[in-house]
Image 1 (cartoon, rainbow, N blue to C red):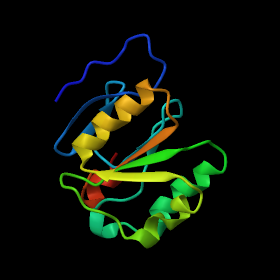
Image 2: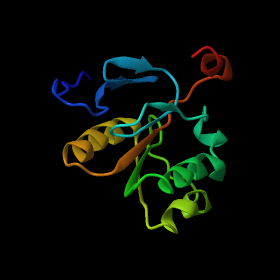
Image 3: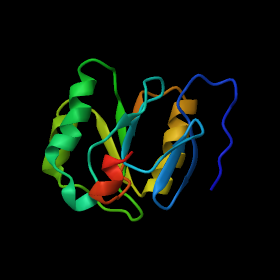
Image 4: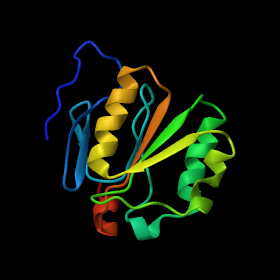
Length: 136
């Protein structure tokens, strides 16, 4: 699905998404990413839902100590899957909301929250093989 960005925006906007990719400001990523409204897009080092650990979410909790994050949108891939509560406890103990949805809903929700001026991070899981991640 192609989305149309506001050309005057200085924020990171998800401009397209599909099976195995997400496009941010018209740059395509075929691996998991962390997206914030004004920070550079960051590779999120997780290649599958089964490979998720608490450490992946701790990266977000660490960022919360330097940024004022109010909500994390977790895009769990092609289907809706919830991480164990223990994985997100570092976020919830800091009063940071975590909403889980499939990748496509996460992309749409992130854009809406950015447009509202919310302090949001999208943790977008794009499942890949290890060789794909290494070449990105």
